[in-house]
Length: 220
Image (cartoon, rainbow, N blue to C red):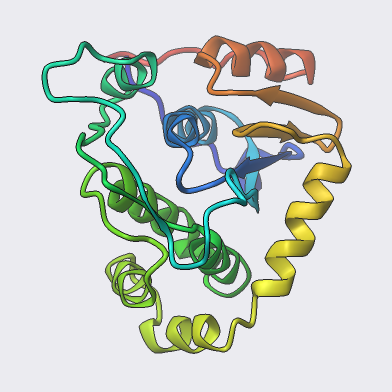
């Protein structure tokens, strides 16, 4: 089955605000991103992102870690969901980056280069989960931003100056204040939330609750 993207401005209806609270080192957030993208294609929604630090105990320089999965181990639940979503999680990670600088890059993109923000999100998740790169490294972040079509030097300047450091901390504190304790948390119209990487049916049920029935499927 295929579907076409719904542009709220063209559909003549008020878009639903969708805030995705996530962290780039959260595997379920990467899986959940695929469901949010489908939501964007099928419903009139306006998606934005809010940062959340999954593990504040990781030092700024990152931390050496042991691989959770060995090559011959059966797929974990999150690996299985990722595979079903068309994602590939590489095994053998021996380093856990601090994701704060990556969250700053995400906030910069959302505020300064919004049309590239979703591309950057994808690039950061792919780098962390599929190619096992250090997304706490400035040079890695600048390269990923450039590959996503962003102004690399402007991104470098923002990250080097830590222009968005305090803003990320404030956003994280706000999310905790409103009750977010796990990611991904997807907030609809600042009233309702889906917590965790729920199947797409949960998103359809939420949209129906908000007055938007599932769109008619188009032919393959």
